[in-house]
Length: 561
Ligand SMILES: O=P(O)(O)OC[C@H]1O[C@H](O)[C@H](O)[C@@H](O)[C@@H]1O
Image (cartoon, rainbow, N blue to C red):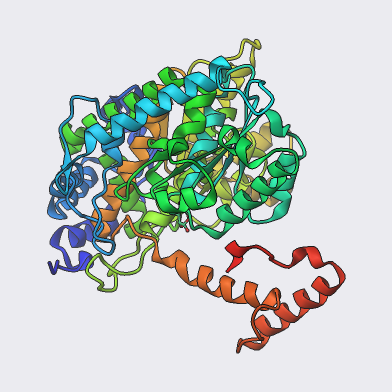
């Protein structure tokens, strides 16, 4: 299907004309002249409230953005995704992470297979297993209950479970600790192994493919470590796998009965809803995991049924298009005002940047307009004392997403009001700024003379008119967290449709993997030096020389090949 280039579409051109006319209109003035701006530009869905009033937009902007969404067939593409069409064209796969959180009554078939039945069979398996671990009925090799879960995985088999376990840590089982090992750097695994007792540790080897070098190397090392004090027969009590690759799992030595399957129609970065969420179900219990799925399902229902104008993921996506494609904003900063969401920006990095970091359309044509921005951020208030300076007064326009939770799960007096005050003050400051006139008045009131005042005015002036969204929820419950993640998944989907990219493949990660395997063989002496550029040749030589002194850096595992 050959589509018209995005930049040539009539609505895209109208948006450009509109941007040239009012793109930098002052929000401060708009708030002053539109008393109902908040109520017009905010909405509730699935337990979340989105305030998008502090954006550089008016009704015409929104009308044009929604027209662009319709022109690019967002609704038809959305329906195709939910129906299980193979929208991941380069891999000929359906994209059905939404099916993982749908109720048991949903009927959905892919390639003649009733996937609802498959999904719920695995959820039942996770339910039973998590109950056994939590109750202490599943015992380790010495008859003691499991105390530590070590999830070994990387990318989508790591970021989601770790982020969600941290987000829901207020509900963690008192006896259980979850650890996450991802990096092939042995410092990662070694630090965790130093803390845990093999007799009371369960390893979850989480890998969709069960071939990923980092995960396989860590899994083999964990197994060898375990076997220093246990026997092969003990492995079944201490190693389980989450994967789509049964032969590789059994080849590793994990019993098929201890494997939690998922399917090729679940992308790695969309897999937290699958058995990749096993560590979450174990830590917070299956009932909470089910609530997490239900919250995401509520957002799915909203995304499927709400008109585009009142559709939270669509609004978030199209406002992002406005900044990326017309204001030239190349990054978006995310600031969760909740310590338990400290890993959320990192999670979104994979979700968004691996999905929409593409330079050709789904049919292989070069893009006519910029695609995915850089996503980054840290918790408020920490970011305020680090990089917010640049956000307020730097030369780039960087739209912000603030995420805040109205009720805390701790009881320490005072903290939460100060936290929320900081969140709301930041979005107000970004929007309002501080004019030279206001700065001058302040300095004069402090008694500075005219020369000192004028010297400081440029430094103390804030341009303002810096846009932000604010997402609020009552409490950081499993359901609200599920809805929040699903909101961003669908935002990324809608943006991918507008840009015309395949949001569900990730070929860009392959080249480095292949070259790393070749270099690993050279470093270990398994292959002769290859032809490289002078920089790479020198770096390999330096590592080879260091390896002579400290042989530990040489890769020496079958998984390095
Ligand atoms: O789960 P695995 O098959 O081990 O894959 C782990 C990760 O590695 C790959 O390189 C991809 O970039 C990610 O999308 C994926 O989540």
